[in-house]
Amino acid sequence: MSFKPGDLFFGLMEFLAFIVPGFILCITLPFILHYPVKDYIEETNDTVITFFWVSLVLISYITGHFLHHICALVLNPVYKKTYLKWKIGKHIEFVTKVESQIDQKIPLHSDHLKKAEAYVKINTPVIIPELEKHEANSKLFRSLCLLSLYLCFLPCLNWYGRSALLIISFLSFSKFANERWNHRYLVYQYFNLIN
Image (cartoon, rainbow, N blue to C red; front, top):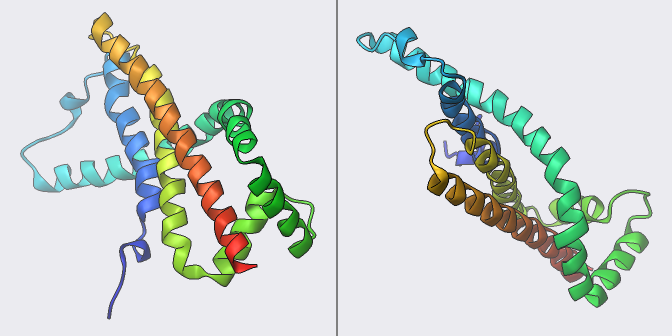
């Protein structure tokens, strides 16, 4: 029986978009709250350590979902008003052409990207992993953008550390915006090729 990593409970999307950011939040939050977690972990018992790590992954997954939602509420409007507007202006002819094709092919009142992505995934399922990779990366870096700002509140950091985290936050936003645009552009290119 052959299987691929996406067949498991946690695929690439879940790992990058939810578990990694949730794990960073779960690991650093006790330091910010001055809460000694090590006192509650019995390090000599293998069963307890295994339970701790499994619990931490599940809690990270759940926390990552909440963090993902907060980041989407905060950063998606910023992305749409800045980076997306600039990129659409740069590729206005191509975007207008493809969006008119989308409206002709799928006459629903919905987001162009969602309609095109659904159409492309149904007609060429081979490219789903590539699309999911861009989507997962964009979600990871969107979360890392806000996590870097959050980590500035760690009490043990000096101004060098805080400055580095601010730079990381800016670079994470840039990477998030680039991955999100690449996802849109790739979907539009495949939609254009199919039609």
